[in-house]
Length: 429
Image 1: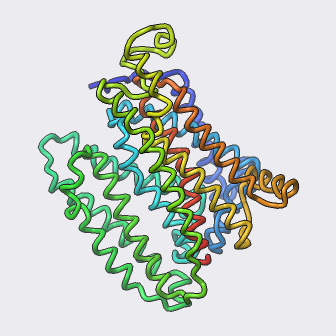
Image 2: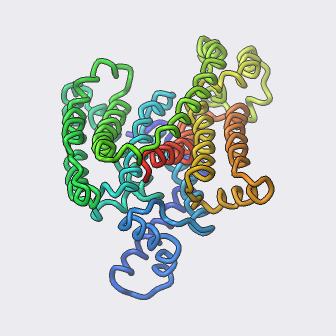
Image 3: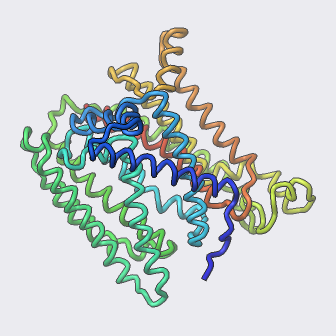
């Protein structure tokens, strides 16, 4: 049986083929490195990618160093991955509504908490490198795929019950609990400072039963959305238990709570955007319309040429309506949160910037204005560009998954690092 929308766009085929080539070169380089065979591919990977990640993961000093080569490579691969994944999700008939973004949100906190734990040396050397950026994004994606695939299996079997799906989710959360507890209990932080792990045991145990506890509240999710949401949330609660243990062991003078004010500031921006645009989006929704999504079978050129009441309504309301969409208000507020967090860390707490492009912007700001505050304006401008993009962009019906994943990618490079920086500052790591 063929999936709907099976035919791929040319740019999806190119993206898929390039990812295959890049993956082949990467794993070939890894294999030749393991075989101790001298070659330029392995040397290139070691110099620009692997050495920094491995060293940072074992030393627990944060992110790997960035340079122009790996910065632009990561950005290019992220773009290819978004395009490829959107095609794959379409062919699997995954729901393309905003609910899918909401279902994936726990994995943002999953990755953030995992990175902060690695910063605090709360993982042993066996898995710490998996929580160093950018490897943590692939690690997170692996659990997303595992969770989504579990839901897909149950969705494919029409006779599958919620009880059996909940049991599978509990099992996958339990596996996370066992893996991460084993590593955390042997970490240098726990062994050196005798950190009691009872908060991790309590919250980890509760996390296993989250599918049963939250069962009734997730009825509007599809099985795929539900399983992804629960597995991400369960892992987040496990990590929260480990962070709680670390906080309880820390002296009060090492904790710094005032940077946390950045979170409600950013949340307020997201809420205001939603409130400002909700009436416009509701008006479109009543007519079966979504700003920026074209009717089935219509191309953008056809849309630009037609005149109809629906088009007039969309064009009248779209600039407000998009503000109420989670892919927009979360991405925009996430960029602002990241800018504020970076400014606070650099100006007041002695942190340094490792991303090459951001570092150049900050250096320019300091050279010309004696402050890193201009970086906030850059992030605000980037948030405005995201809103502007979704206001003007017209996605064909087949491209709805691409629309979602572009917004998710903006959260990954804005909201996630911003939250991670705030928690690092609060914990003093």
